Amino acid sequence: MAGNGAVKVKIDKVEKIYSGRNGDMVALNGVSLDIMENEFICVVGPSGCGKSTLLNVIAGLLEPTSGAVYVDGKEVTGPGPERGVVFQQYALFPWLTVLKNVQFGLKLQGVGEAESKETAMKYLKMVDLEQFADSYPKELSGGMKQRVAIARAYAVNPQVLLMDEPFGALDAQTRTQLQSELIKTWQDQKKTCFFITHDVEEAVILATKVIIMSARPGRVKKIVDIDLPYPRTQEMKMEMRFLDLKSYIWGEVYQEYLEVRK
Amino acid sequence: MDIYKAAAGGKNGDGAQKRVKIFHTVFYPQMDLNLRPGANSDRANVRRITGDGGLKAQPQGCKKAGGNYMNTKKKNRQFWSQIPNGAWMGLSLVLAVLLWIFIASTESGGVVFAEPWEVFSKLVGKVKDGTLWPHIYVSLFRVIAGFSLGFVISIPIAFLMGWYAPFRNLVAPWVQFVRNIPPLAYIPLVITGAGVGEKAKVIVIFIASFLVLVVTIYQGVCNVDATLIKAARVLGATDKDIFFKVVIPASTPFILVGARLGLSASLTTLVAAELTGASKGLGMMIQKAQGYYDMATVLLGILIIGIIGMLMEQLVKFLERKLTGWQETVQ
Ligand SMILES: Nc1ncnc2c1ncn2[C@@H]1O[C@H](COP(=O)(O)OP(=O)(O)O)[C@@H](O)[C@H]1O
Ligand SMILES: [Mg+2]
Image (cartoon, each protein chain N blue to C red):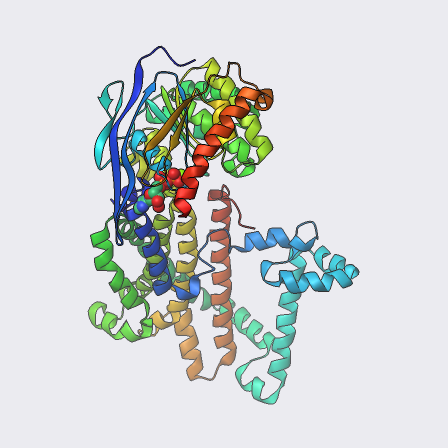
């Protein structure tokens, strides 16, 4: 199910050191990874292993201490319209309506009111929230907010979608529902996805490839191909192959977790 | 560009947060609860009070006591919660007047407190001979001029403090220093510098409101959620976009809280400002009446200042409802 073989995002020996009052903290220790076009990558690893740091580096929000990230062969030097980000905390602008939130990025690109509204409505329809266009974020549930955030990221039509535990704050049922929606959206409109989660089950059901990161300092420990067929359904979570993959990955992550405890 | 670094999760991120806390407690120890916009406003309480009459119908402070009490006396709960807000206001007012009449009727209280009807006839007399309005007008002008000046100047200063560490490091100690000085103490300096005219009064009120505004708005700038700035940046926002489309709207609740506190500071400074030898103004009216032991006029002046304060507060609250209704209310 991987893409057509072209490398979309190249992470090349990325190292990130945070220097603080208590000395230097190595968050990423030479991470290298090639992400193919239209792959759905899920990243798992113990808390604090540098997953968010890596995502921020790819997004261009953080500068790596050494190494570099390339998108279509071009070095990342800052945020760019070809990379969209969905944050765990939704990060909707509370003073804007749902529609205006989704229009935000389009307007920044100079798209006019009418056209940006039309596009925004299209993506709100995609996440099934068009009837909430004029609501304010505070009037929405967590799951709805995250759907708006996904619509907002999609609206500017990025080729790479970076998601940092987007469903981490949601209840189990809503999370399952959004997983299904995300799989469907990704199948309809292929994008290269980089999805961080601490939920191994979520990683397996979504991903074409799961990246297991080692405990701090973060490195790529293992790459696991997920050979489950598409379309993926929630029922697959009961199948043998799924359970095998899940327990294998879980075991690997648990080892790293013990590493942190030591 | 601290804010950007914080947004980018750079090493300044955590430091900035800490700095806010320290700054906050040093500058504004007594304001800790008040500074969360929306959380403190009476609007939130009103909603709770006029709510469905459940436990939520109590202001937060008395939740616990009220809860215990209510469980045993259900009927009382129904009774209290059904009184509309306006009726409470009326009741409170009537009670205040009764208390006033009572105190005025006692021997020692009567020396200080003129009877309400005396004050009322003073009001009628002063309205009739046209001597009251100029006092009100002049005082209002000073308050509004001083406050407006403070408002306009505090916004850029507060944003600069939030934006540029060197500027903040230089200016914050000054603000902190002057904040603790009562206006009465520096009035001689102002008179010497600006004379006894309008300018001196406006300057004193300006200083008082500016200090409150700058501290509150600075809080707002620092409190802008770094994730929102990140979200804007990945959607293609430039520095300018971030300032106008994220930082300003996100700070609006703090600007309005600042306006409310600033107006209140302006009014409380008014009497002090009018000590600088005014010929008109409510503070001046009070001062002069004291010389004649005319307590009715003193009380009248106090009442008018109080009413002006309440009206101004209502005005800002109205603006808050209009402009910051998008806020999540903290329960
Ligand atoms: N701005 C920062 N300054 C200093 N240390 C940081 C900063 N951000 C993250 N870290 C540290 O870097 C490590 C990796 O963080 P993060 O990427 O958030 O991990 P994860 O997302 O995998 O939980 C953690 O130990 C964290 O404490
Ligand atoms: Mg993280």
